[in-house]
Image (cartoon, rainbow, N blue to C red; front, side, top):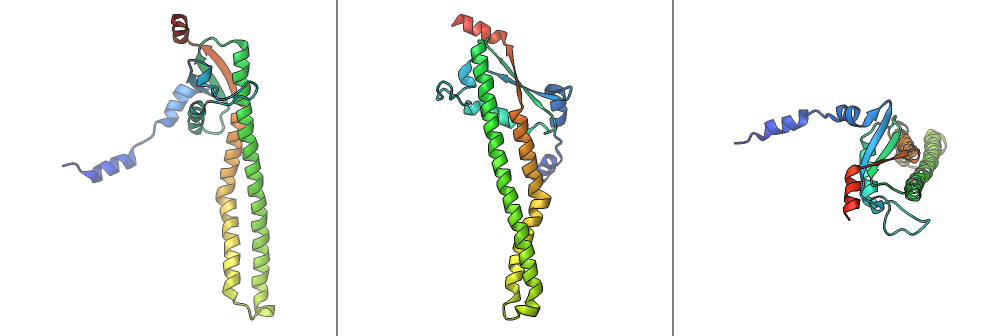
Length: 201
């Protein structure tokens, strides 16, 4: 009979080799190199795009973002595209589209962070005002139930504390991550297998 408790303990104590794998396979001289094998332009650029309005293939984007999530934010990224010999025009389209998508993601993140800062300011004002009202209850507002102002005060205070100690760091990391993607370099490496396939077609 299988001992499920032993299995749970085994899974709980299982160690990750992620750091070792990153150091061995991805990181070099303080730079993270992400390998990506493609067979043609449509593996990178969505076939639904039109000239001068291209977008990235969703599968390519998912692969890229899932890989980047595993890499600590302190490392800059170089995307290594292994594939056929692209023309200079094709390379330019790929590089420009990756840069534009990265810039879009960065702009969206900046807007979201700006919104969160506005909300933070509102939380500060709400905490201060409700705190003042609590202090004035006994002297000037004795007829109003005190519990109402306690609820309002702790609502604002809780949101304020959560932002300062938890959410603020997360928003900062998202901003760094978006900036890193927008700063990502692209290198093209000709793959002999792709060249052979292309010559056979």
